[in-house]
Length: 173
Image (tube, rainbow, N blue to C red; front, side):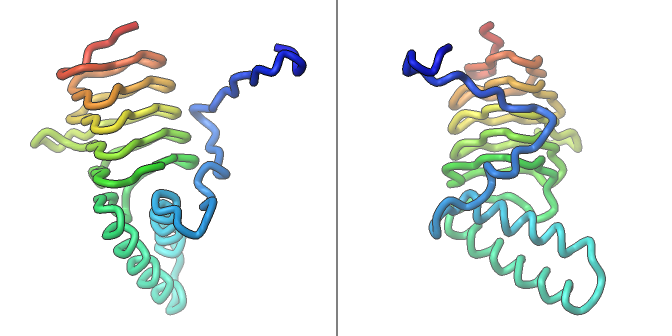
């Protein structure tokens, strides 16, 4: 589209290269980004040795506990979340510690990503949008650029680029 038409061109979000600018806190009170920052900084300090690293890990644990309490979420410090993830409204988000979440995903409030009473947990590829209240349970695989509708319950694989909605979730495109 031309610049004179007044319409913005759609920007393509990568499913493989993290856009770290998405995670940078925008203001003092930015709970989702501050919670992710505490997790990221803890993981950085946990890889290092020494007394200062030990002290910084403890400080990051305190920050994590604070932001987790503020937003009533359960996102563990040892989780495997790719870069560039957005959690604009982190209230009630629950993520199993063994879940793998790809880069540049968007996770809304009240989302649960975890097991179904087995050791198997979801694997979510890059740039997946997960609507409010959605549940992704069990050893499912969600492909890149997929969209999970609000309040959907995903218990089967979702292919790349697909839209899944409903209880249980069905592919609609």
